Amino acid sequence: MSIGIAIVYNLGTNIFWGEISYVTKALSAVLQLGVTMDYSIFLWHSYKAEKANNPTDKYDAMAHAIGNSITSVMGSSLTTVAGFISLCFMSFTLGLDLGIVMAKGVVIGVICCVTVLPSMILLFDKALERTSHKQLLPKFTIVTKFVTKHYIILAVLFALIWVPATIGYTRTEVYYDLAGTLPKGLPSIMANDKLDETFEMGSTHIILVDSHMKTSDMDRMLSEIKEVDGVKNVLGLIALLGPTIPKEILPESLTGEVANDRYEMMMIGSEYAVATDEVNDQCDALVDIVKRYDAAGMVIGEASCTKDLISITNHDFQTVSIVSIGVIFLLILLVFKSISLPVILVAVIEFAIFINMGIPYYTKTTLPFIASIVIGTIQLGATVDYAILMTNKYKDARYEGKDKKEAVFSAHSQSIQSVIVSALSFFAATFGVGLYSNIDMISALCMLMARGALISMAVVLLVLPSMFLIFDGLICHTSMGFRKKREKEDRAVGELQNS
Image 1 (cartoon, rainbow, N blue to C red):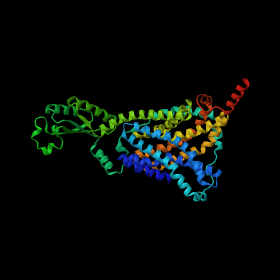
Image 2 (tube, rainbow, N blue to C red):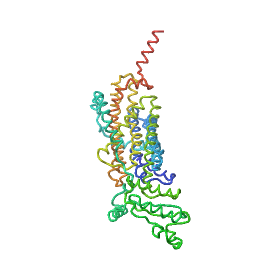
Image 3 (cartoon, one colour):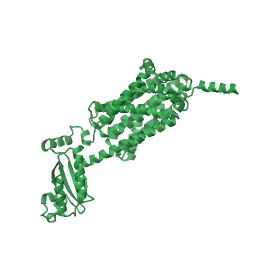
Image 4 (cartoon, rainbow, N blue to C red):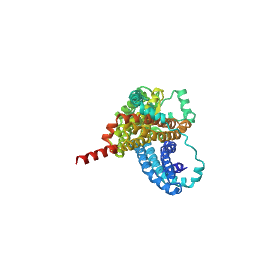
């Protein structure tokens, strides 16, 4: 209920944005539910611990729980917000739309977590006590022992799997046909399929040129266009009348449909489908011809728009990846005051992203183009929290004087349940929509996010501890707060004895 209120606030405040994409509206609720559930769990666990220490005063226990949780909740939300904000650097405006709405949703989720949720817990405190039950999840001690004992094997597997994961990640095919993401049962899609089946219709280009162009030039331009590979027909005044009949003799009621004082319009029928290499080459050839006769002329239509989309999204993919990795790298560096930990943590989550995005290559699945851009950023921002949680536990254990194996064992055993619950919450929030939606873009995005949560969970629980054990010396020497208390005390005693 608390998160539901936060979702309503987020969707309601979109009115100030004016309008949002249907993709954003479909994804924002499940994404907000998935990424902000952790904050509620943090507060609830903290409240139970405080209430165990102070069972007579639930208000004081909640006050301490909020104080204990707000720092970790805000710290955890920073990486998630950073991931969504990086989407705003896309030139494709869906990124800006989704980035702003989701960043706003995370902030609202944090506010509701420390205001609305505590109020509801206190209000229903008796009901919560009456309906409580034993913890269902086991301790997973066997998993912790296995990870700390066989960390070398896990590190070797990490290195070996990285190669096929990278190959799949770089070769996964995407499609750019926006109409292809819509259900096949829609009347418009069925009509287009029927036209293609009956008349072999591919795509249609529209050419706009200067309406005052000489008739002879217009005729030569159309002759060249007809020679372009894949052009089936050309429709326009000159194409119908020929160069010998002046278009001025036609009534304005007819010519006004295809020409005005500035532009004259022609339609080009193509054999090629939208978003294919053939139609993209055809668009280049048409643009080259049109520009020779009219520098301000334009070739427009779905195929041209999709071709531009391919160029834009290739640039967006590089930009968003660099920004998201850079910002989260900087946040981890500032949080842990470490040079090595940002590299290790980001590398581990990127490994999970490579596996997630590489699987479609091996399953011969083609993804919508937007998936390759936003999934990596969302998975990085939403699941790096798992790695940060375990790193905090590891840091505390090392600072208390435990050796590296004891520290990693302690961090893993204390984190595993929280990581599993968090990942399963994210999985549950997105998997259902992925199954239900018949819009391929939304379904593919949700299924990728659901699978990404599970893969990140597995990588953090199996690979990250091995990285801590292997690079423990480097981490302790390049990070603040990892030095053992015993080392400090021994050094102080030694200095005292020397003096």
